[in-house]
Amino acid sequence: MPVPRIAIVGRPNVGKSSLLNLIAKARLAIVDPTPGVTRDRLSVVVTLEAPGGQGPEKPVELTDTGGFGVYVAEGGRYDDVGADLATLTHDIEHQIGEAVSGADLILFAIDVQAGITPQDLEIAKMLREQKLGSRERSGKLIPVRVMATKVDGPSWETHAYELAGLGFGEPLMCSAKSKYMRRQMLDELYELIELWRPNEHDPDEAVTDLKLAIVGKRNSGKSTLVNTLAGAERVIVSEIAGTTRDAIDVRVTLPDGRRVTAIDTAGVRRKKSFQDQIEWYAFDRAQRAIERADVILLLIDAEATISQVDEQIAAIVIESSKPVIVVVNKWDLAEGRKNDKGRVVTPADYETYIRKELNGLSFAPIAFMAARDGFNVREVVDLAFELHAQAGERVPTGEMNRLVRDIIERHHPASIGGKHGRVYFTSQVKTNPPTIVMIVNRTEIFSGAYERYLMNRLREELPFGEVPIRLIFRSRKRAELAMLKAGKLRRSDIKEGRLHETDAESQGFAGDADLEKWLADLPDDAEVYFDE
Image (tube, rainbow, N blue to C red; front, side):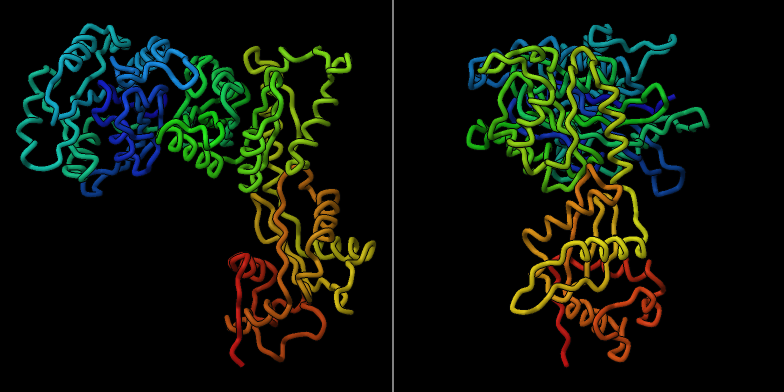
């Protein structure tokens, strides 16, 4: 069985997203006073601690939903291109109903400072009559508890107790703003949830084998891909650009047992075109999704030319140093089309075009997909697993040094001021991304064209052909001074001309692993000085 699920429902602007962020102890959901900000179901697995720490922790899946009843702001029914946002009503209500039907506990959020409104009464009636999803499962009615929000201090507690008149028992209460009664609310929530005891056949909902961030400009097919992976309408798919706002985590178990967390992100457009603060929040969530992902799928619309927005997203992806697959989506609609010369455009033609336009991603594999029909979707996921494995490879220090010496012997760097470049020691100090540190005599000799030469040769020789590599140069003098200052090295231990691998132990390190860890802990731009 999955972990217990808690669904948060209510009208707009009662603090549902703030409540999720409060319980999760992270800013996951976008919080804004504009009605209709939350559209999809936003789920996160959190751990509830036992009251006073006396007992086992309880994992639960917490789901935020759209505000029921009002889906557009006053005067904001139409977006900047004239699309009618009210057409999303059915999809949003469907997502709310799915959250209610799949929950083990429903938290009915009501703004205590606004009091009970006609909308609240309508939602309460729909919950009782099971017109807002199904509350019945295996002959048992799923419990509903009122969550009094915005209880900012003691003076609001009496107003919160008035909500018991809705017939769902004594309300829970708290304030996301002031954190008032937060601990008591979490303790009560803990008691409401049955202790989940997994057995060997139960999947751990909080564990995933791969986190896959799906990014791209608006209407490139990100949400369609997530639904295809999930095998269900997990997120809203609409022709209206910008429908997705939050970064939505959807956990999927593949037929072979592998578990993937697919992260659907908001479609990006040029920053100067952002209409409001919500778009900035959505862009921020997309960037965070990239940061926490293992592999990134950069979706390109096969029917459109590569735009400035595509290049902007590619730059963010490159900066992240995460493995990435450039996915040409909607290939079923573009396949067989002719170019301006009357020739049929082939995948090879399109690959040449992408390499030219997104030259910073020359290492990234390119895949062609039709997410709506499922064409090549499973193959792309398999490729993502392969890239994740590549980024996690580690090359022994001895092998790395022998390879680098061979590469340099084939083509030496140009001298500067009569000084020839020399590499004294090379080590891979991290994985994900593979990070290689070279201790050299003068870092400036190895910059520019020669750095690119080294990077290309390393890609050819090492198991990192399709993932980003971080190559860091440190001057020998700086490295030695840093070791001296750290007490790791005596002056008499410094060997003339190079740092020997075999000298690691005599230099105060417990072998190569200790040396690699020390190098890895130094900031890339560390400036270390030794007072003579």
